[in-house]
Image 1: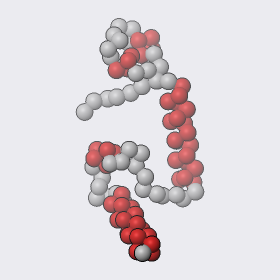
Image 2 (image 1 turned 60 degrees about the horizontal axis):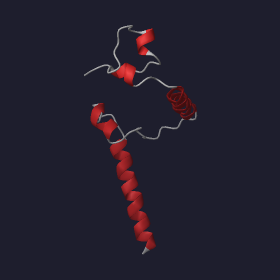
Image 3 (image 1 turned 90 degrees about the vertical axis):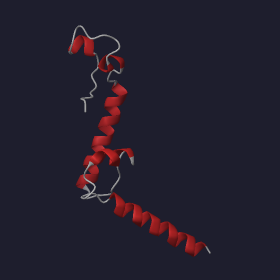
Image 4 (image 1 turned 180 degrees about the horizontal axis):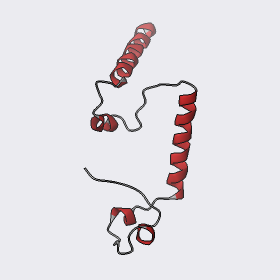
Length: 94
């Protein structure tokens, strides 16, 4: 395990001696990332207030592999439902 973060200018704001090969220096936090994060967080807030509870991991199945809460999760339920829906469409097409 390790801590991974983002900062605009790590050498100037965190550690004066950080070298260019440090991930915090190599991958600075950009305004574009901030705006993207804001958009995602605001959408999550709107969905929460609207009672929307879709199971929709951001980077599935990679997210699911690292989660550890599979016994509480409904992602398998969603996958089964999507499979049933697609089988129903195939039957109606015939």
